[in-house]
Image (cartoon, rainbow, N blue to C red; front, side, top):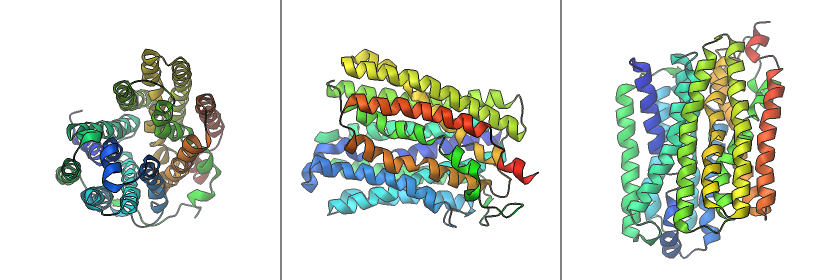
Length: 400
């Protein structure tokens, strides 16, 4: 890892971590927020729902010219969607203004797609490993945000301490952006949407089938911790440890499975060979996720804290699907349209962010039903991967 390409990857990861520090921070000030705004706990949850819906809308905007053109400009814009609300949130006089700002903070996930375009131009076989390192920043950022909130006093914090934590994290985002800007090279993300045959990525069956292979993973990633901990009688300290265990697990599995994808990709760097490695890593991740989720189910049924820790540590491999999935566009699509394909695949898969919270937290009333849904999601992911592996790749169609 001596050349500049890996320096870019590390800087990308650090910038992602700084941006995703916003992910859980507000909810860790729960009592302080409820008391300051005079809201109910149910109303507090709307901010996280708004954030998750923002993650979905970010990919919808990816099909526009908003995140096209200069790579550096796009990254600066995306970071600002998280940083500016972070400056404003603790000064908002109205709770629904906070909820609106949290929606815009969800746009930070667009970094995942634009960094995919960067990595596609820097690497071939190493793409999954590089992407795994970058994606791990999501979870290191989550941990950093939780720790910063705890440092400021958590639920018992004064409002001045809440303001201080938000301002520190907002300033850090721009400091990291400035450092990133110094090290990373710029390039153009194409604005035009076209292929050799003029076909739209949205009209390609492969886009829809493969796009949904990551849907089950995101369903689990964004709801498993919260749903599970709402159905156990562990102490607050034990729940905090479980959240941390899940975040660390997903961060580490992102790097581990990314490295496995790299080793498998080395065997055959043709488009089909790279895609075969992607499918292999994602399928293995879902199989092990199923085992981890089953252990979590047993742990929640027995209220067994130690078993729950083990289950979360294993189930975190669901994030191992991410590095492989996010390297699909440059492997499977013609060069002219893979930036567009990255956002299209992201939009389809991230529709889980708009659906999963409402299903898991509103409609599902029992832990048994919830865990059955999670297990079913793992199986659905495997079935969709098997189906996509039998399809012709768009780049193969273009060359026919």
